[in-house]
Length: 425
Image (cartoon, rainbow, N blue to C red; front, top):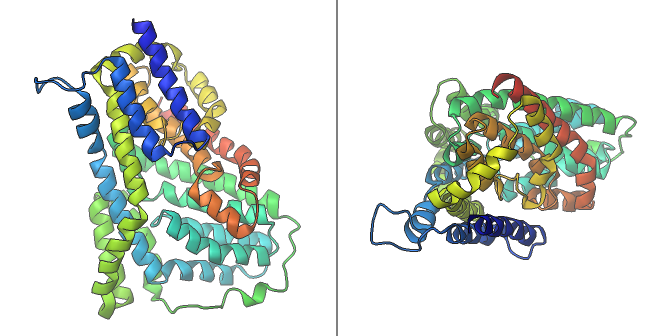
């Protein structure tokens, strides 16, 4: 009977991946459905009069829907801050200032704009900011002679580096697999360095010989807004508060977004903040729904009945040697694409929970494996909203971005995994 149950659980996993990859069912629906089906197959009771028994209704659905409450809260505050940054013209000003300071050399322009985008996304995330950045940065890069697919890819490389220091992204790993926050913060610095070095290599290799176009000079100065110079520093303030002053992300984001509104347009601060709350929550509504589904999936796979079935199998296949750990997760890192099994916003959240429960790898090693594959997903995944957006602005096929960036993002994953094997395995 146990063998049949394991086969059926694996079938649910594979079926879920297939549905999401072929876009027959969105992840926001597929993930909670998988959590419920997996629990049912494993023998978790649907309902019980005994309050101590973990059931599908109370544990998988009820507790699961609220499991990532802390992550959802940080995500909301981060979205509100991002909306303030956007409304006050800070992100626009950072990009244009970087373009002006870079001069007229394509490689320097590419480096400056990618760095500026990274700074912006330490405070922002979501489709709205990607659209705003793309409509400014892509024309600037194209006017500098950068190839369209490279211009689109640089937006994503910059976004990836920025999100590594975006404190609103960290709580997910704490809530899903119990990864220590201090480990997340310290390793983010190393991940940022690895990704920055590889991104720089991408720029050097892909912008050599680029020719500046005559349209360049007209770009940076158009439609500029005057922004308080101090405000340009605000995207990195939450990083300072969290990394160095040890504030929690929620407090750091709330304080920073209020201060940002006050120093930019003090007379309109209340209006900016109130509208940012509403619009920011709208921007992340889909992400919140996805996190509810992830929570249900997590509780479905972590229910006692499910864990008892899956842990022996997972224990046998997980790498117990650091060299094998690096090799396996590097080679398999493309499985983070298309909402695959190593995607934390797909099946990866559920598998990571099983990995930790199996006891072969520590939460830090599991978390870093999934964080390493997340850079592959963030930059190269054609199913990402941000990839579709930048591809549209650059007028390129989204799959061309995948081909251009995947070798580099896999090298990023390799570097992160090597660091993990040496220091945290």
